[in-house]
Image (cartoon, rainbow, N blue to C red; front, top):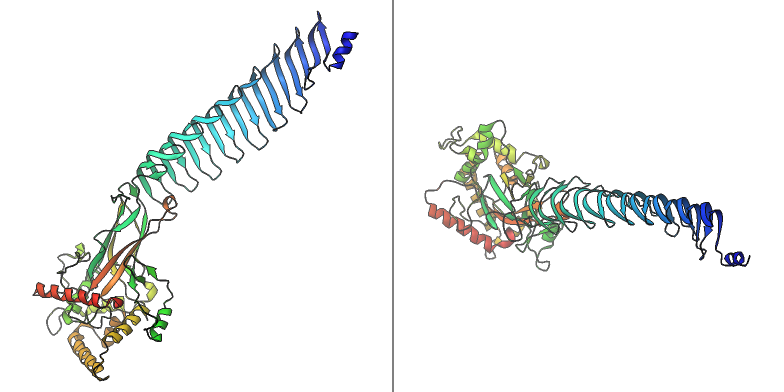
Length: 541
């Protein structure tokens, strides 16, 4: 009796089957520390068979026992963390196949090795992301598929919870990358097909293309020279930080546009009327690397319609007619008055514009005028309707171009007629009149001279236009020679890897329409004098 009282006092007791003074069969045993309590089968004094081990904090294990150890299939619950497990055990550890559910929503079904995820399994994490594949010591390791909450999907190699080796990532926006990985980043040889249409194939380092484009460069230098009414092309190249052509990139979308320089006005010395005209320009000025600001000017793409003979020949014919008659440089507010005639002789960079290749060798024929020079009235009427009679919104801008092997080409470009009441032109006219206004002549002298000149011009160009009304319309809406700015922007949407390339700029010098000259040296001298005038009056260009 004394021994029994001592067991009760120590809270250690057993109630159940006994064989040969050993626990055998079903019984209940409370451990001396009173934290554990076992209810289940016994054999030769050991827990053996099916049983339930309860803990004082509410945790428990229920399942198979063998020779006193948790072994076989069973269920385990941890009250403190809310984690539950159902599956195989060995030596009291999670070992084999099983399902673990955590209180935060994480769920794993697969193989375990002594308490850790190891082998193949399926994991649903607390954020709703899923992984199916190989594990090692609780980490994703080997081959596996990962579905991210944002829609991205990865299939490939893993190393200790990081993407490593060869893998394919399909992004939620439709982009796809296939290639080498290291430390969860693109590293090594790989190909990216971006949702914007950009395709890059080459080396990657730390998630960035090693030979990727970092800037847009307009080929031909910072200054391009073309003739009035002559289609021209602009070639663009994508370059790396090292200045090499980004040949591994395709599909980037580039947009070309033109702009005209805003006159530099000082508020203290500029008349209020001119300042008011500046305020009427609603567009926000665009800064350029040339040290001045610009506003947009319309640019169009030369269209080759079904009437090939007339449509393709008209601009060239009119340019030649205008140059012969002298109307090309008449009333050109962008250029100071001078003897600008055509010719390719120039001290500047080579011309980018010129006669389209499909017009080479073709004659432009028309009804001969009284001078017998073969100037076509029909073609002139066509030109008048194209550039003077059209609405402002009827001329679409050139189509955007996609880069191929690191380069793009904008073909058959023409400066479009200016909108009605184009304020920059009006501002230049007013400034030009103020600059050229003589101080030592009577106020009536200048207008008389101007009228004389206009009379001479009308007499020399009368055969080029069918009526004075059409001539006035062309003069008011014609593109003026001078300096413009070409801008090429990266308009890829969405931007490739979240970055847009900075725009490229080039000066575009527009010369009066090209004509044949008997003395090429004289032509060169006249063009050079025109360039000097540009430098003399920079605010007008």
